[in-house]
Amino acid sequence: MSFANDRPSTFPSASVEVHGGFDRDDWASGYFNVEQELNDVALRPLRGKLPAELCGSLYRNGPARFERGGQSLHHPFDGDGMITALHFSKGEVLLSNRFVRTEGWLEEEEAGRYLYRGVFGTQKPGGVFANIFDVRFKNIANTHVVRLGDQLLALWEAAGPHALDPVSLETHGLSSLNGVLKPGEAFSAHPRFDPGHHGEPCMVTFGVKTGPTSKIRLMEFATQGPDAGRLISDRSDSFSGFAFLHDFAITPNWAVFLQNAIDFKPLPFLLGQKGAAQCLTSKPGARAKFWLIPRNSGAFAGQSPRILDAPDGFVFHHLNAWEEGDEVVVESIYYRDYPSIEPDQDFLSMDFDLIPEGQLTRCRINLLGKGIETKRFGDRCCEFAMVNPRRQGLSARYSWMAVAERETGYAPLQGIKKLDLINGDKCLWSAAPRGFVGEPFMVPRPGSDAEDDGWVLVQAWNGASCATELVILNADDLSEQAVLEMPTPIPYGLHASWVAAD
Image (tube, rainbow, N blue to C red; front, side):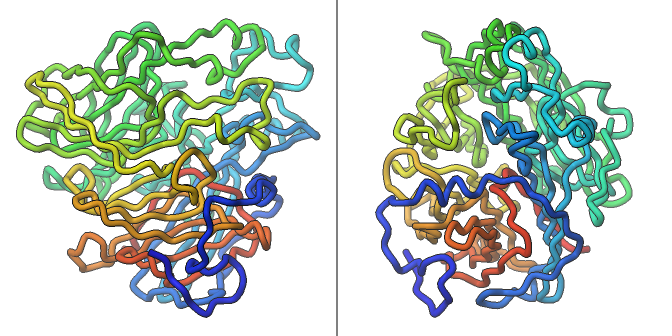
């Protein structure tokens, strides 16, 4: 479904049909160093009107430093994190943006060059001999941002969280979460927010220590009232095999992890030839596994985890999970293999036809050992899918996701799709041919019980004007509510979160 309107020529009208074509230079122009940090600058609609009921803050994290001292990053995921905050109130919105002042960021700002290797292949200047046996990492705090109590947390899954002021975005430094985390302990960049399956809402998250045996620490934190930020549940479990875990899913009784069939061969990393993530490869003959860890608040508290075979493929992100009788249902975005950029490849000129596309897939896991049923929701490449936050851990009818414009194969994300997970109906909003989108975030309308009543907030890069636009879509039919141009360009972001106004 597409929508025509009388808007000026920024993004082309969604009524114009585009068949997967885009300009690579338009896409590549969205990766640039942010040079300006702003504080509470008002955004004005290019068209449409901000909904008065939309009150709260949208926080987004993502890499915003792609070059230092004339050296470009090998992979954008190695870039230093910057928080963008959009504060909505009474039909107005204010923007602030600020880099996370990590210790490594401050050191490299002063030096004017890279001092640390990147996980995804960025090397320090000086060749192999400058990188050999240097296994230090810079906490780049670039993946996610969430509010927990009176702190805003900038997350990067290989290390601890950085605490920020929710209003000024000033960096307070690494946080142990009141002594919960030990120095150097990893803390997931992909928490899940339980809307209140056992009474009170909470944040469920994890830390993982990998090796021949991997250890998962599952934690739950209170999110409301005077106890917000307090640890309320904590358990640890060990599993055989190397764990590459970016995301997980929750139900009222389970935390669901997918152990991809991945092998880690660190020698090229130790020898200064590759980044650590480039040393990950699919493990021939191995089976992926679902690890189901009982939540301490659920019906199976204290029991051992369940370990079951999973389908072939690779998963970064899950959409949702829920329980039906003796089954746990998990919806995930599957790739046929682990996507990687080798040392001799430039991510800005990579061959998209060689990259596996992500496809939304449902797995029905029978807890009585009767196997797994799978269903794929079409062929269109997608990423960053979500359900109404009130349906987290419950069956949901609708999902919203970023999709490629072309119907098959991998391509940059240029549209937003709403999908009916029951009957397969869908509608699309497109920024093609010159626009590119990031993760959509669905905000429910206050006081409404309808699952698709609310708004979808999307940060989009306009290759025609080299500007970042905030697009507000009506969640039910993806019609445009408003489009606003940001006063400074913001690169493609990663994950976002919404904090409703008090």
